[in-house]
Length: 78
Image 1 (cartoon, rainbow, N blue to C red):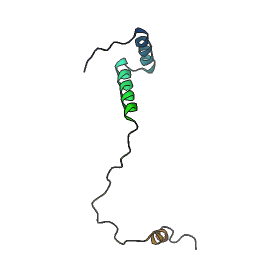
Image 2: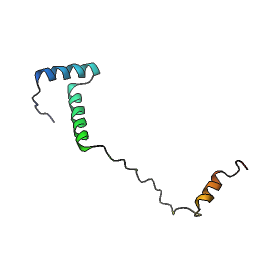
Image 3: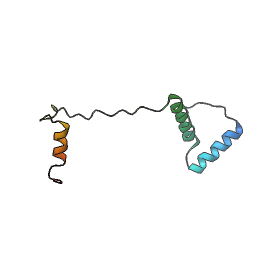
Image 4: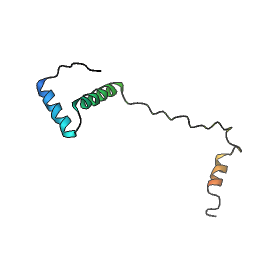
């Protein structure tokens, strides 16, 4: 979408130079700045672990933690 925004001349010149030094269009710099300002206001995003289940029926043989440790270290050590 196109829009018109009034920006102080000095800020515009600085932004144009900064965008050029990064090799990006001024439009991209403005979009990045807006996204950063909005996300800062919202606060950090909460991490959500996607559901990675595969439709199984759970453990075949329910094991206690000592039994799990035993299987992990089976054949190692004594």
